[in-house]
Length: 265
Image (cartoon, rainbow, N blue to C red; front, side, top):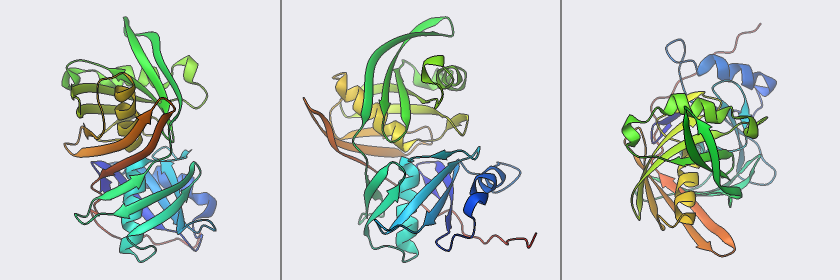
């Protein structure tokens, strides 16, 4: 499946066939050119609190608490497979999330309220002082505003930010945004776990939209143009108390379906 170019392998594992093998399976299946290829692996497993639980594994086998585009894809998957209705609640390790299949086929996902917002962190990378804004939108992000986003060395600088000493041990995703107008920004993201730039990042789109709003440069709804060419829409309410009602909407498409055979050994 793909959500704005962020692609995932989604498996119905409600019978718990994979179990502890999921981390190794993610590393095997997500390898591009040598296997199916994906940014991550998503498992649908049972939940006692919601319609189902989503487990998300990065391409390197690490398990993450949340993935915005993955959350929209798993919601579409659950509806298509009769696991949930068009309006659903699913569980992740970062909490419960509501999702809705819209009339146009897009998926609207209710995100957790952000936390750990820290503005104006001055750091030197690549021989230049850069201003980073930290925020957790389910996973940690460091947002940096840049000019001429198309020409920016996202992988080179993103890798430095991802492994910056102040962000260990969990590391961070690195987002580079260019504000186009008060309702629009362009975004490129270096994702931890993938260890490369991806064509889109849902939690990163939310992070950039919220940070740009805090800086007084945008206001909701914010359209986020992704590297893959699609647009994600971030909705939210902002007050002196912070953010609430944060949503992420956009496409969630099935690319192809297949079956994996499990070896006896």
